[in-house]
Every structure is written in structure tokens, then in C-alpha cells.
Length: 312
Image: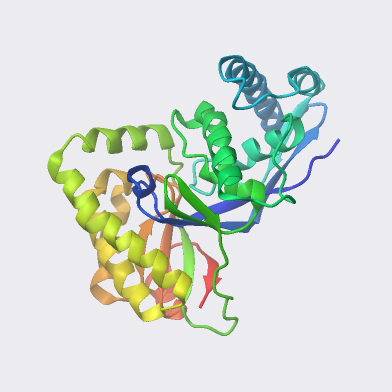
């Protein structure tokens, strides 16, 4: 048995903000992928994945018992395959903000959900919201609380525009410019991030009136503008608003930025060579970068590993 491939994703804009109804834009990132396989579990990685699937299966059985109207699975077949040595064979780095658990959730839904919504049918807003709700409940096993967006992106493998919690749509993004100097890139922090503790810090901060005001008047405002600029191909405005967003994040989301990156984060804002922002929940993993001149950014960040995601 070998299941179809499911890809990693990048939430270009909207981390944390989408919890508070900001816009968001998520795109597939085909550099990493994963698929369900069965093996003799002779190595530690496949054994660990199989053990995790055992626990996940128990969780899914409980989920369908509690919410039968939301989703049901062929649990017996799933249990049987896990017992045979099924695991998730994945190149997606875990704790890096590129959707490792999302791809696994998508793969399990694809193989074992009853009456599943398929990629081939007419994906109305209502169907997208149903999928997002199902995936949110499934992925909560890994993160404590999930928007369902990562698995949705991985499952559909198309860019998704989040207008608000109840308004999401498949979208197109401007064609990449092969010879373009500008780029969106990933910067490897070399640290594994944990989503749950970061989300907990964010939820605690939300109790503070000043923090909520900053979210509404600055963070959400610039996030929404960045999404509109990116989709509209307005590069000048995109970089200007990404710089503002980068400042807001550095000033208000410090716990989510590994300490050794505070300096180069500020350096980008000061020199305009690049602007950094969170990729996913932060705390480690990848940091997302935007630049109008990739060579300048590479030179300024020569001590770090950069992966180009998109050229413009």
C-alpha cells in the first residue's frame, strides 16, 4: 500500500490573526510531502509514526462517537492498517510551521473518511467550511486547537484565501516571475517550534485590552493589506506593508521569535534588505522573509540557510 502524496503548506499571511478574523493566504509548498505507507517498522522514525497513528486512531474513533454528524471513518480498516505497520512517510519537517500534521490529517481523511468531500467536485464555500471544520477537529489532536486550514490546504493543494472565519475560498495567485529579483523565502532557525505553547501565550495575551487593540488596529490591518497587495500583484505596497507588519510582530510577538533572531529581524527593518515575519506559530522552525532583492538578502543573511518559495 502506498497512498497519494500530500504537500506541505505555507501560510503567507494570517498567522494568529485568523483566530481573530483577519484575512489570510495559504499556499501549497511542493518542496516537502508525505504519504501513508505500510512497512515492517524496522527503523525508529516509521515506528514512532506508527505509534502516533495508534493514538490518533483512538482519538478519531472518539471524535466520530461524539460528533457523528460531523464526520465518520472506516475505523476498522484504519485500525487494521495501523496494526499491519502503517506509518506516515514524510519529508515535511515537524515543528517548522509548514504543515507536517496537516498533511497527515489530509492523508487519513482521504483514505478513511466515509462520504468524503472530494477535490474533484464543485467546491462551494459551504463544502470548504465543512472540510475546514472536520480538519480542525482532526488536527486538534496534535495542537490542542486548530483552524483546520493546514490540512485543507494540503488536501486541496491550491491556494486558499481566508476572508474571515466563515468566508474562505480557493484563489489564484499571480504567476511567479522566473527572472524576478524579489522573493519570498524561508529562513531556517535551526530550532524546533512547539505550536501549543505559542498558541497558549497568544490566548493569554488576548486577555489584555491593549494587546487586543494592537491586533485590531495594526496587526490585522497590515495583514489584510498584505493579502490584498500580494493577490493584486502590487509589489511596492506589499513590501511597504510587510515592513510595517514585521515591526508590529517584533514589538508585540517577541516570545514567538527565537531570541537570537531579534537582532537580524530589526536589521532587516533598518536596512530594507529584507523583512521577516512569523511562519506558522513561531517559537522556532522557519521564519518567513520578503525581499525586493534576493541577492542583497542572501548577502545580509549569509550565515543562514534560505529556501526560496516564490519569485516576483
